[in-house]
Length: 521
Image 1 (tube, rainbow, N blue to C red):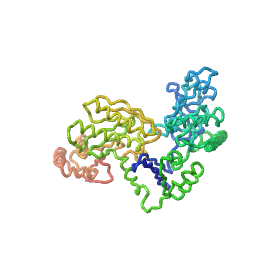
Image 2: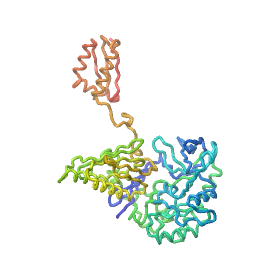
Image 3: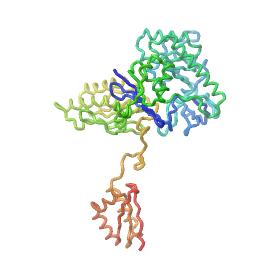
Image 4: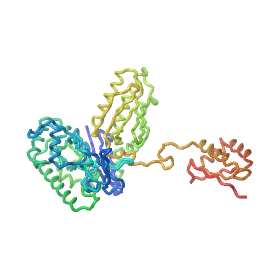
């Protein structure tokens, strides 16, 4: 599989696209005026403890207080170790299990979920209002929700993730060679300091001990600096800021599987090269500075994919299409045959459309970064075997997705329910905002409906308008309808009111708004 990392960097916005086999697989956008906060470490103050929800709100100097779950509250390390052993069924004095639960991939948001033990201590016994705590943002603010935070700090490097609050060594499951996994685990166990945890990332596959030792020392010094800064920092305040999107992409996405990294900014190119020389010098030759006259995203056909990622309807090659509707509670995806009529029979046509839709749905979920609950309404299929084919195809299609997914079998109604881990806003919410006309509803009243509302309003205010001249100011499209299709209705109302009604079009008026005023004689 060929893969490229394309970076379009400007002073106002940076866009990063991971292109696999000529198709945009992942897209990241960061604007200088609205830089993401996931991974940032803050010194915050607990403003409210909610025993009923086993959660707390923490002020970290953002617009909305951050949300902290009970499972994300750190205890002293001795208690953490004891609880971890208890959860594994290990009596005091026994050795810790050699194969503790490991993260499914290198997604940092999932690391802690995979290794943290169950802790029954209620949140009111851990936190008090006014308490100062060190926290890290695990999830960006999404919609009306504030950021989700954790006290289990993780500091990611190129090959390792430092977990200073955990006594655990994990190896990414994407390293499939068992011999290599064992080597890496034994190596980390031998060189790490006591009572300090690490996750070995996928990029560490085949790494030499010296390289891992150097990165481990760097991360430990970084953690010491964070601790020193937090001691003298005011509350609330930012203590450590995660890398920007350019260097995050280099750190997390620029692996041996990526053929080359191409960037169109000379200043950012020098910064990337400096970063690579420090952490991954073997990949320096794969970095290129783009110097073409055509914009880099246009040159590689990415701009068109960005626009496609904002469309509600996506056409399939066969002539079918899918419709994606994102709501507060869930995302609904509808599959339709569209112009595709098939060649043999209806069941075969439906199956082919559904299978084609599966690939596009998996692609769009990853490209748009759609998370939460997802309901897919496939076209109904009579045969159970065909429903199973579609389910298996979807499960296979999302295998490349780094975000954790859970897919339930297709129901008799042709629905598949699934979840996809959400750590930040989807690309649509990042690049778009609710329509100020329809306030995010997606629909406007028809011109006919607005005309009839005006007629009813005139009838309602009959005593004030009877026998007078009236000016109705409306949007030009509504005015055009009054002068054409609804002219007879307007004339009939003039006779009823014994009034003269003048309709005036004004382009500054909202399509659904109007103003009715008497004309002075």
